[in-house]
Structures are given as structure tokens and as C-alpha cells.
Image (cartoon, rainbow, N blue to C red):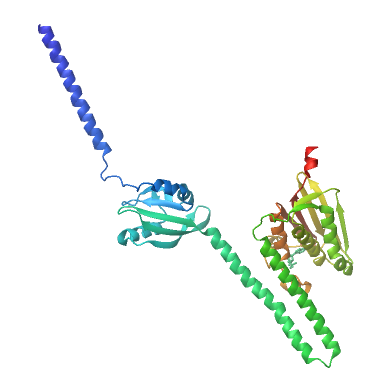
Length: 377
Ligand code: ADP
């Protein structure tokens, strides 16, 4: 009997201790779980909206912590360790929280080892405690806009020169009606300026069509032999006038797939430059050969060459190593820019080797085209 009492007493003690422990544990756990402030309620469907938004989206709570961020926002670098970045964005959030007004601003987002991103932010109140930040990376758009503005300014400047010259020459002609020799001289210079103007306008049109570096709808298989022969033919008169030995050597059956007019302009530009920047009596060699999956069209001259610090700049629009000389040769500074864009638009690239006093070699590298029948065999 005593034993039964002792046993039931012990069991009661153990059960009591266990109940106390479980109750205490639960209380402690509740203590830990319950935050100081209730979690902010993100409106229903906000997560789904954030996922489909193309712009970067961030939701910031009342304590300035990021409580939702789209993957694009994190990739853009405006969220770091659950904080909005840079501080300028957080300032906007504070202003919006204060008066509930939607705000927009352009902010720079620093990027490690590169130029900062130009970000356009739109900040709006989402609930009484949450603020929504939408950010759009406008770096590329701003760069394109800057290039466009530069281009328009350059075009206006370049067009003014021959137009001004033509006007002056026309005035000179009208004042020299009793001097046939002077009229002859002025009018032939006028023709030269008009030709320069025509060439400039044509190149500007070519370049504006090529800006996007995408393959044109007119792409077709092209025989490289014909392309090179036509480009050499185009410069033959100028080469003969300077007694330059202009030759081409082309491997048979080379084909590329591209826009014929564009590729013709590119190869012609390279050959024309080689003739223009070479001394009388020198040699210009054009070769085309297969190199794995590529075709390499190479134009080599023994001309003036280009110094290493200029080589990087010659593909820029309107860049001329020697502007005074370019005026004499009729150069526009657009030729190589066109070559570069033609190469890119047709899936290729352009390489250059040059040494002042020794000469230059420009190589247009294009993917080789294989006719479907050849692929099967
Ligand atoms: P341009 O109409 O002035 O020839 P390009 O864009 O074709 O314009 O060339 C830019 C500059 O690069 C030229 O002004 C010239 O100084 C230099 N250049 C181009 N090709 C050659 C070459 N084969 N040899 C030496 N210099 C060259």
C-alpha cells in the first residue's frame, strides 16, 4: 500500500514537472516568436505584381528595411543587406512617407570597377507603412542619346563646310564672268565640294541604317570573289592615277551570307583607304581566304600607317588622323565607322595592324556561308 502511495506520488511529481516545463517552454518560445512590432502586411497580390514587373521594384517598411525586392532590383544593386542603396533613394522614401506624394528622381547607383548606373526612380506610398520604389536603368538609353546628340552636332558641322565652300565658290564664279580661266578653276573646285557633300550625305544615310548592328532583311549568300573584284574595280582609276599596283588573290568558292550593298561598301572603303593613304608607285594587296568557319578579307598597303595611339580611334565617326590631309583627299572620317558596323551587322568583326611608315593591314572577318547541299555531304 505504502509502495503504491509512493509510486503515485512520484508519478504525480514527474507529470507536474513536465507540464510546468512544457508550459514554460511554450511561453519562452512565444516570447521569442512575437516581434516587437507586428510584421508589415504586404498587400495581397503585391508579390505576383513584383514578379512580372520589368522594372526593378522594392518595398520598404516603416523602419527603412527592404521587405520585398524583385530579382532585377537586387541585380541592379539598389538593395544591399536588406537596405535600400544609395542613400539618395532612401531620402526619397523618407520624403514620400512624410507627405504621401509620389516622387521621381534620377540617381546614380555606384558599381564596383565600372561607371555608375544612371537610374530613374519612382517612389510611391503603398500602404500607410510601406513605400514602393520602382527603378529603371537608363544608363544605355542616356549613352545612346549622348552619341545621337554628338552625331547630330558633328553632321551639322561637317555639312556646313562643303556647303559654305560651294557658296563662296559660286560667288567667286559670278564675279569672274570675264575670266574664263578663273571660272574653270572655281567651278571644278565646286564640283569637288559637291562630290564630297554627296559622299558625306550617302555615308550618313548608310551609317544611320547600320546603327543597330542587326542583319538586314536583304541578307543572301554572296560570292567573296565578286565582292573583292568589284571593290578593286571601284578604286582602279585612283590606283592607276597614282601608279599603285592593286592586286587581289582570292581562294575559290568562298561564300558569306550578308547584305550585298553593305559588304560592298565595307570592302570598297578598305581598298579606297589603302589607295588613298599610300604613296605613288606602291602596292596594295587584297586577299580572301578561309580560316576555319570564317572568311578573312585582308587589305594590305605600304602606306603612311597609323600610330598605336590613333589606331583605337580611327573607327570613331568623323575621326581623321590628319584633318587637313582629309580635306585634300575628300575623306569624311565615316568610312571605317561604316566598316565596323557592317562587320557587326553581318556577324563579323574588323581587325587592324598598322605601323607608321610601314603600312597597314585591315582584315574583315565574316562567318563563312555553307550552302545546305554542301552541309549534307
Ligand atoms: P576617311 O574618309 O577620312 O578616310 P575613315 O573612317 O575611312 O575616314 O578613316 C579614318 C582615318 O583613319 C583616316 O582619316 C586616316 O587617317 C586613317 N586611315 C584609314 N585607313 C588608312 C590606311 N589604310 N592607312 C593609313 N591611315 C588610314
